[in-house]
Length: 322
Ligand SMILES: Nc1nc2c(ncn2[C@@H]2O[C@H](COP(=O)(O)OP(=O)(O)OP(=O)(O)O)[C@@H](O)[C@H]2O)c(=O)[nH]1
Ligand SMILES: [Mg+2]
Image (cartoon, rainbow, N blue to C red; front, side, top):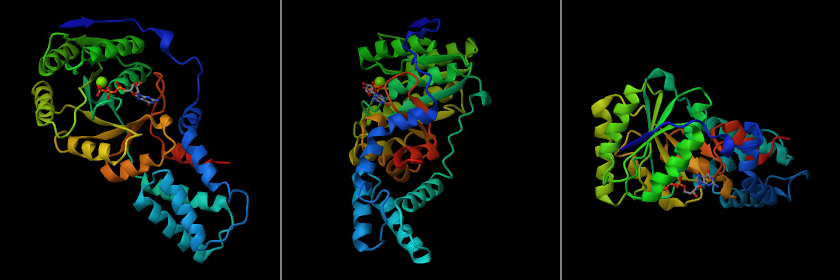
């Protein structure tokens, strides 16, 4: 078992001090451009709500992956509104969409209250390559910015490179780090790590796990075991269990992710790589499909590119707010 404490390394932090509005705007740039392209023929022009027009809107929303349910709901709303008042502009359509999204996310509670427990234990899980390790590093930085002391546990004992990757993130975030390069399963290191965290009065313990596919039963069993190990030391932990989902994956990734909820008490989602897709509507689809709150969004590869999800900023970034 190897444990180190590091001073914060500032060289990896973004130089620009962008606001969260700017980050959302930048992260959803591709998606916004795609939607703008779709809406180009109606922006600034007088429109007429008819079947053709609704068909066009449907195609645009589909292309951005808002999914059939949400798209249909929006079309119905536009139609219903047009029966009560005349809809003549894109701005009015946009307002209807915004209102719908506001409703949809009104119950989306992103609150994470690390001060409620000490140590506060946060676990990440998800399929291979979804962005777990990166997210964990970014979270350590997020909590460090709030003056919290974190310990990262390298719970991915399958890939040697995973430990190094995580160690680099821990250094960047100024977090303590615990690993065991010789371990063949994660239980021991997680057990040791939590004990260490308790002893050192760490505020937050962040546990990384290996990527796994839902149909690999031994790996899914291992998740149950991880849960048992955590609970053995702190029965009410993990206080936060975040399922990390790649925002660029299709339905398959979603189906896999759903299986995690059968084993872990998932408390929320982190949707990553949203900067890498023009189909930003996928976020609403994933939320709808899995039913967990979206707590954070990954909008880039830098350490500051993980942001608490904000439905208003999300909608403004997609549809504009001018
Ligand atoms: N553009 C972008 N890339 C991201 C984001 N989050 C993660 N990545 C990239 O996605 C790739 C995979 O990230 P990891 O954090 O290693 O994913 P993981 O889930 O830990 O992978 P496994 O441990 O192998 O299952 C890396 O190249 C990351 O830089 C994001 O929000 N935006
Ligand atoms: Mg990883």
